[in-house]
Length: 425
Image 1: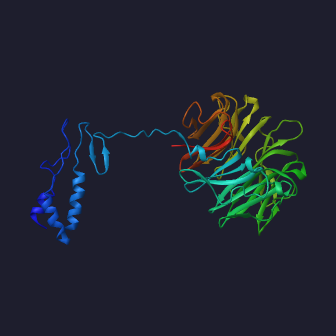
Image 2 (image 1 turned 120 degrees about the horizontal axis):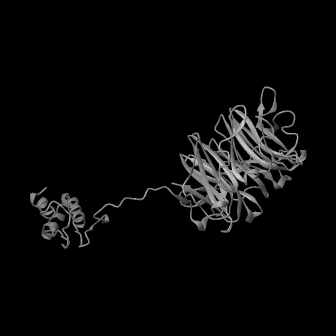
Image 3 (image 1 turned 120 degrees about the vertical axis):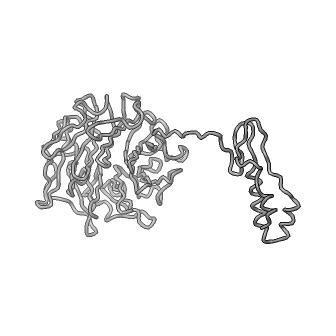
């Protein structure tokens, strides 16, 4: 390479490209005769390209103290980005499904999914995935044969499963799965004896469990198990001697547990929890039956794998949220005794992640917005805004925590019943 060429491609004599205040931009002016001679030699063409690139880079800065170059405008000082966590809505509001109900939020690694009932299609079920920008349907939208109720949604080994009360089968229980880009039946459709309600699903070691209130048996809680390609009733005898108004199943220590709110005719509506004993093939009470206060509602039941927890609204303490833990012999409150919320609440949803308990609820004290609280190291704290977040009058709340990041989905009633999700980051 010619020394003369190298000298010509150098920048101005100053080594620094910073511009003194009130100085005009400095531009490099090449010897264009030398440039033309360079094109006569193919070996030097690449250096000409570099020369033109460097000419662009040497555009100086104006009297505003900013450097202007090929890569854009860069300020003279670096601005520190605000990293304070806050609640942020996920997805464009114009592309969020409207007129929805009963959402269930679930994650597959980093990807959030939502199963919900679409009221615009006669209450059929859809599942949507958030791609980082908008929510998109997973496979066919509104894939159930008819209207559905009480959906329960899980992802297990990268497969999506939805249990629900099937309107095309006299509201009997049905489970569908997403397989090879198609929603299909998992076992036979309508496997309960007759109409079901409050379906809830759990999966453990490739065995599927579905709990529901059995309309054929005065709404008594019932659990079915799927194995050897068919559904069968789990346990001999009845789980409860009376009917139930809500059932939730989870796995504790490898054994199915069912929580339910009894409706015994007296209107007391207390909670009981039963555990399946595979040795005797029977359901045994966990603690004592009907251990809660009367008139409870909005129950949420979760396990950390070894210990069961309950969250619900307790009318005897001004409809505040009560959180209970089973210590091995009895149920006890872990909400301080007076309730978790500061006042009346509704639509509780609980999730347990890395030993921390998260409880979300509609907070009537805070303008009917959503409050999320976290229990860690024997202390409750509010996650994010003390005055609640999201719109007023949220219903059907579903909380999930993924990689220590909380997400809350709900139905935003005032805004066309949109299916809305917030993330705390």
